[in-house]
Image 1: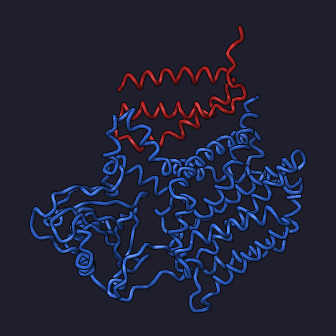
Image 2: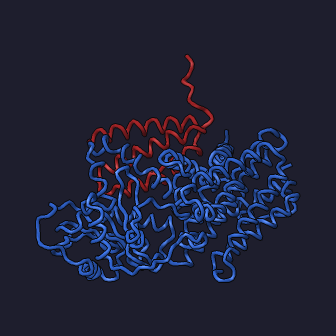
Image 3: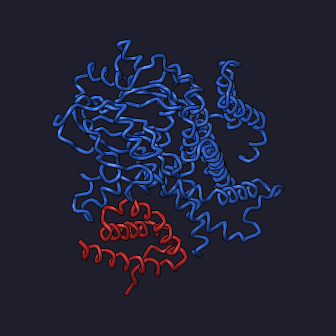
Length: 474
Length: 82
């Protein structure tokens, strides 16, 4: 087999193996860039009604939850999330949250099921926990191989045809050109995602791989200090009176000019112990960082803030920044959003080429792949469009709602006429997005509603043009 | 005597390339220590892709032999630095 044939075979099979799962990941990943907007669209982001000081709130939590022994965290009000909230790990390991409003009303701390967090879960693990995360690590590796082989194949087309998209030479040629040009144009973006995605997903797998053979079992116990945000262990209760939180926050700001605290993590609130302050410093690729102070003297114990980090923390937060695009404000997030959408088109065109290439030689394979593609992609889009609605009316049923939508879409695509399924999916998508955009018209109509409206119109155009799309699937 | 038949298509080559990249990163981590942990992990994928690109451009038989030799050398070196 010639090298070019080997690369082509590698590209075909890695693309076919990873394409559909990557479509789900890319769609969800694009939405994770806009968590605040997604929650606002769902109407689940409650504006705070009680203006409480962090100190009073922390004191009240400590009084009402003595079982925590002062080990909890506070999320300070920010522009994006103006409310104060607290969170800790329940005995079952689940993170639970409370707000001053909940505490005043006597409501227990509960897990948070917001649409943005659910979409994030889909992006990281397809909503399947550790199994999904491991699966996506493998998919990231396969995706990297597909990128490499795609680059070689595109390079072999010659300089003149590198970014050329020819119309009128048949659907296979058109989709092939579009696939190659899109892939090449957004290659750096895809390389970053495949590299960082594989790294984040497979980090613990790599740690366990190297722990014994290279680090003689000493890596795992030290990992939190090496790359995480471990609180320096201090003997609890062996010092003076804890300083007020406002003083500690001022000390943090003074220690690193430009550092803006966003979270406080207590080792043991109310006693002299370590307090970790997490926040961000603008103007850096990895803008998040943390520092730790003693609560009684305000002495600096640990500093991992942009500009003052060790190589592990600096590199890891830079990679996080690159993956999540949170370093440059709205323009960067919009650019990432557009690149994410072009990524979904890249994957979809790859599926179309696969189907087209086998339409004559292996029609059964082609038909099955076409049905799987329509079912998965349509179901994903429909499920994600439904997320704000489910998040509003049944937030603890988000997984069920999304999973059911995807399953029903797959069943319909596998069993019914593909044209009807496509039209039905397009119309359903239009209706859901239109309702979402116009839910609180005209009082609350902003950028997220406008985007929903545009996507609804695109869904409608797609539904009305199914006959044209079908020509490709014949 | 029949010659040893190595996998001929070359399509399985990414697997030994991955294990060789893992070995190389292990060597780097062994030499540089835990302060280069993230750097080492980050280099794994580019290293793997480079090896795959190289291996697929070689004759499969040559690629398998080269990868085998490099594995042996890597294992010996890793044993040496431990």
